[in-house]
Image (cartoon, rainbow, N blue to C red):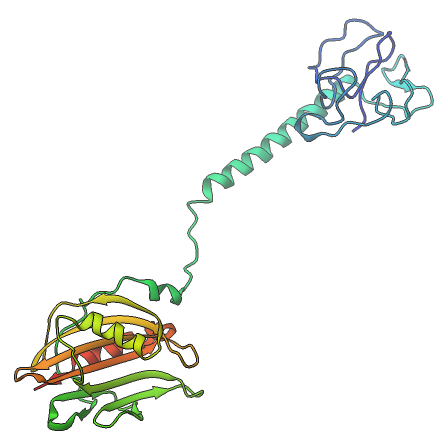
Length: 303
């Protein structure tokens, strides 16, 4: 919008002047009009106006960018004619109306912004599924309860039935050490998706040292990033007692990240009939297969 100034008199308008409120006309030759924008408070101006309104950068800051003074003559019909300049036909009442409309527009925008700011936090956000977070969720053994496996499951035993593994019929035998029982499910690429293994006690495993024994064994096998996520107390299995840990690690081959439930279980006849049960899956599929692995542990039985 063009700068509105008073016509006649000795003073000249400047974009660097502070804003003034509209005052009643005191003479036919001089009328104070509200200025648009304000500078630094001096007639020289600062080049930037209050509220982000830019100021013109002519030599005299008069709004015409040509460095000369703006002079004008008042005409009887109230219009201002500038010598060699554009004629401005804004009467005082119209200026007041336009200024008032501008104030209302600004107030409406501020009110809208404020309303959005108030309502924003209350808006419900769509639920986002984040499977990865389940890996970091706290783990306990509240799920453990020794029970008979589902009737549709199959069974495989160690020699002498010192340990009996129950497993879903969808799993298949997998290669393992002699005297052990191994079932699982592989991905199409050949990586173990579900891995179940039962091995007779072969070392110094005991109920007391089982958490440390298991993690040390993993490190000796070359696994890295070994971490215990949960440790149980003494648990009552069918036919005996045991102790379990939930741990995760990265394999030395292909750097696969696995999470497992590893249990040391001994029967009523003593430690010589004890066995180790491993139920594992990849860490990224724990949310999918973790409950199945817990069922396998719940259904394990010893003599």
